[in-house]
Amino acid sequence: MTLPPVKPGKIVTMGEILVDIMAVEHGRGFREALNLRGPFPGGAPAIFVSQVARLGHPAGIIAGIGDDDFGWLTIERMKRDGVDVSAVRVDDDYVTATAFVRYHEDGERDFLFNLARSAAGRVELNAPARALLAECGHFHIMGSSLFSFHLIDEVKKAVEIVKANGATVSFDPNIRKEMMDIAEMRAGIELMLQYCDIFLPSGPELLVPTAAHSEEEAIAALFPLGISMIVVKRAARGASYYDRTRALDLPGYKVAEIDPTGAGDCFGATFITCLRQGMEPEACVRAANAAGALAVSRQGGMEGISSLAEMEALIARAALSENELTFQTKAI
View 1 (spheres, rainbow, N blue to C red):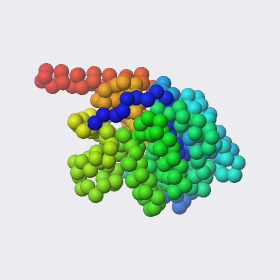
View 2: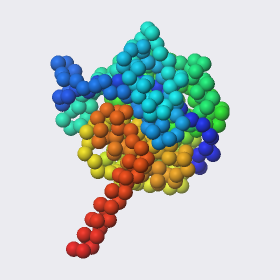
View 3: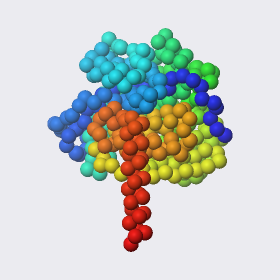
View 4: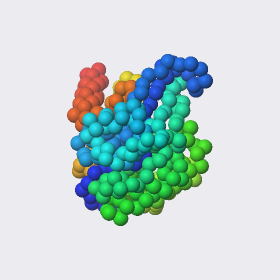
């Protein structure tokens, strides 16, 4: 089974816009005074849509910000990247969402979110949002955006609108450990699996929606739901692609990691955009792996987005290094 024909139109996403504020010192939690860096414009949907726009594809976002510096920082950044922000609601009564981030010594992270009681928790399908959906050719949702039944209801309405118009849908679970106690999260994930054409989990997330104990079992259980493609992100190890007739494993690219924030969002945006631009799945995954690698080499989620030329340059450097290694090995 393959995807339906590409419907012309924008890639649209819906969900949280926020700023990331990052602790300088490594450690756990926030129960002490810390040196902080930021604000960095972010939020998984916002990073995703800015990466899409940077690749030259029309893109828009349905979201909410407060009428404050954090909100305007993110909006101005997305505008510069070419994102349609006409459906971003500016809320006078609620502040822009925030995420405080602290890194462990092993690279894992703790997050302290302000989402539900921020402008991000009040996203709705108002007239500007519906106008943007009318221009949608592909709709993308992040699991991190499904943190309340209100948002799940609004996303469900949006998905039904775009599906009725012939658009395709992708879903990235994007599960944070800090969100696993939110009862709505599992309901949201189960809902999205009923609608999505492309599923983009990271590693263990592949097992979350099913009772499977292995990747093979999970993939076998997911395709009957109507999913056409599954792309499993494996961080530095690359990614795996599955459809009903083939499976591909493609390696990642070696870079000096500075900050993993947004890497999966850049990966997903690149895969979806390249696919809509007519590239074969293998080439889409290679580009997406390069996008993820470039993202981790810069601090700040939205600072990690890159151009197709940058991705192609990284892929070319990796191929050259591999050829040199092969030559040296043969010479020995």
